[in-house]
Amino acid sequence: MKVCHLYPELLNLYGDRGNVMAFARRCRWRGLGVEVLPVNPGDPVDFREVDFLFLGGGSDREQNLIARDLEKRRDLLQAAVEDGLVVLAICGGYQLLGRYYRTLEGRVIPGLGLLDLYTEAGRKRMIGNVVIELEIEGEPVRVVGFENHAGRTFLGPQVSPLGRVLVGCGNNGEDGTEGARCRNVFCSYLHGPLLPKNPRLVDYLISLALARRGLPADLAPLDDSLENAAAEVMLRRLLK
Image (cartoon, rainbow, N blue to C red; front, side, top):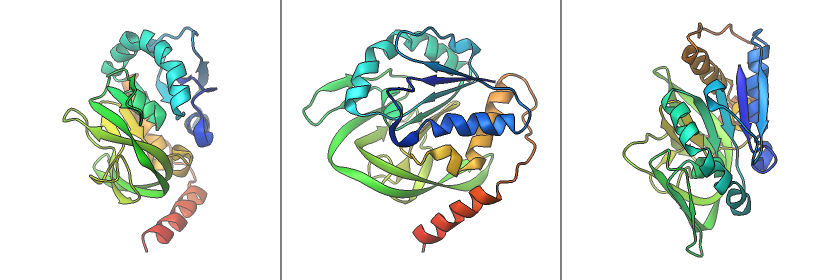
């Protein structure tokens, strides 16, 4: 399994690299070999050879720094996405996959336009623990995380929400949605990091990556009692 971590030095708010660690570790625990490819501005990468791509969160400054480099990769990334590449984008990375991000001053940071969504800065930050409910293979699954963002993201008709908000603000604090999904691209505002807190979601992404390769996607179960117990504590606290 080849894992591409885009801009690990610039997009790593709140320990977002833990998502890459969780994906790789759960693969290795099952005997699946993993190669993690850190890709920084100017570094070559062939997205056709990648099984899982991660794009983390960053401030407006970091997004500006990588926007030009990311634009140069747009066509190749779009082709890989259309071919079913599994992508997880968090917070700032999520925003960059959309059409644009408009700052409070009215300056527009262009996105890649790979997803039908846009983001506008708000004056009030949305901060706190979050619970969302999403669907994995037809089953409702509750996911926990932490949000800290001023951007308010709105989805177009070509994109589905990742989940619906049970606790917290989500995409914009208005419409009850959190994150976005289109093909095998998953986007979210949830830090934490997201994947170590939610093993069912990690395994779903691994299964999708294996299926794209034409490999068996049924994963051997792991002992997730510690992760599930930690999530249950948060669910009881937040859903009381």
